[in-house]
Every structure is written in C-alpha cells, then in structure tokens.
Image 1 (cartoon, rainbow, N blue to C red):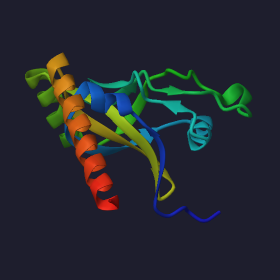
Image 2: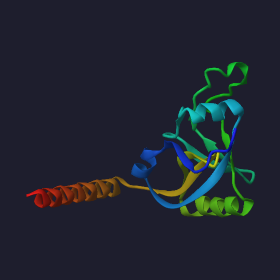
Image 3: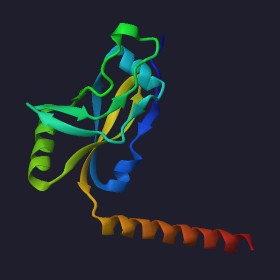
Image 4: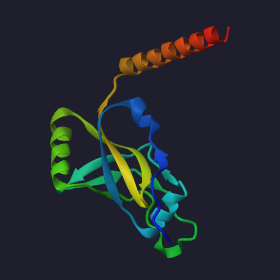
Length: 156
C-alpha cells in the first residue's frame, strides 16, 4: 500500500485554547501499538484532559484516551496508558527547564497523520485566569458584531 501524502487531522484539543495561552508549538511523534494506530485512524481519540510529563529525560502524554480497537482482541492496550512522545533530547531538556522554572505546562493540542505517520502537536502553554477568559470572550463577541454589521451593510 503506498504511503499517504499530506496532513490529515485526527483530533483537536479545543479546550486547551480556552484554558491556556499557547506560547510555542512543537511537533513530535507518538510511540503506539498497532491497534492504537488503527483506532486513532478511525478518530477514536480524546485529548480533552491530557497533559505531558517529563520523566528521566523522556516525555510522556498522560490522560490521552485512545478507545480500544474493536477488531483488536488480545492486542488492545489500556486506553489511558502513558504514551511516549518522540522528540530530540535537547528539545526535551529545553522544555523541562521552562516547565519547572516559569510555570508553563505541556499540553497536547492536536493529533494528525503526516505522510502516513501519527504526529502530535505539543503546546508550551501558560494558564489563563478568569478575567483573561472573559477578555477573550468579549473580543470574540466584538469581532463577531463588527463582521455582522459589515456584512449587513454590504448587502444593503
């Protein structure tokens, strides 16, 4: 079977953009079993409550739920097991320093297929306070109202 070209989105963590300011994004690979990949290709993955931890120089995605593959029988793994992320060691060290010192969090933002390989977009995020969330919501409402008024004016 030929390798697929391009990028195919699988899942997105919309809650992360509501809860955090995303400072930087990184692309990393995922270390998965065969049935997990098949289940993810069907879109059966949930990133809502997931986060990443750095342990012993390696980075793991915790709380990322991959539903068991229906035809997978004994080869299915635990849906909530920690998934190892594949990144360069110097990037992991850099992220570890930022997370420990400056109060950042590592949050999975989206999962996608890139040229037939499963990739995860990892965000270096800083938490939002309640007033920040309100400001963002107010900006969205104002922008939506301006667009509505502009389009209504154009129609008339």
